[in-house]
Image (cartoon, rainbow, N blue to C red; front, top):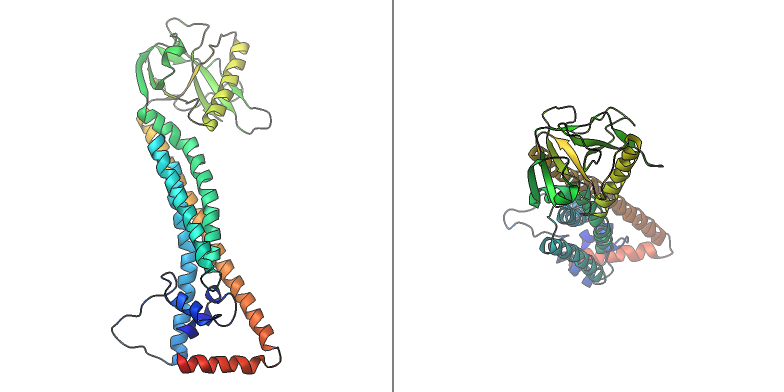
Length: 360
């Protein structure tokens, strides 16, 4: 086994052989790098063939560990931060997962001091990178998709709401079913694109067709679904049967608060343009026929984004592991060639090889 260690640069630190016997024994006992031979059957082929096969297996185990361990930590943290519902206990679980991965990175650096080769150093560094990237990616998915899904799942729903009623009475709503005479006023549409942004924030008043009012408390809203003053096509605006509004949250996250403020700015511009009045806190909704289907779509989109970002990180982890492995191999070969060119080095290395073959 000790002779096999020279094959893998992750286990030798880039040199042609382990530094000492203790390092070899440490690697032999490492569950990431070795596996027990089966008790049944013998080995076939020459000694060189067996040594080559064991070396290839060790290469594959070290690279696989460097790919899968950081990726597993990343996937676990992304799921914890993106999918779990808001609230103290669930956020605590996400924090514990993050602390567990961070602790594993620290253990890798501690173990690195007990063993030869850079495998654990690289693994600890990649897990540390995952501890930074995963919470950022998971929180982004939570804010854009899952926060609104959980709000709608756990919030308050109202039915038969007349648009002329004050918006303050429905600030706790997550779902609003409007009265049968409620309509979108598609003649008072406005699309506002903030300076330096590529996103258009579209709004249209929700009115009571029986008694239109100058004060507009409820607005249908959407992103990039209208022209500046016409063609409001957000959600199911083109469907005359639509009467349901999915409330856009204003305080579940910073992303939601910023988006709500931009919709309020668009509604203020529309009110000024069309001679309307705007309450202090209007309610913005996504206009749909089937709100339950839209909520399920938010959950589905969040899960798809988690799978996609985890797959991307797996490809990145695979690339980094291969690059680190072959970089170590290249520098190891260069160091060995440099050592062989020193006077007397060739005879010394041959003596070491004879000593290894005689005792192992």
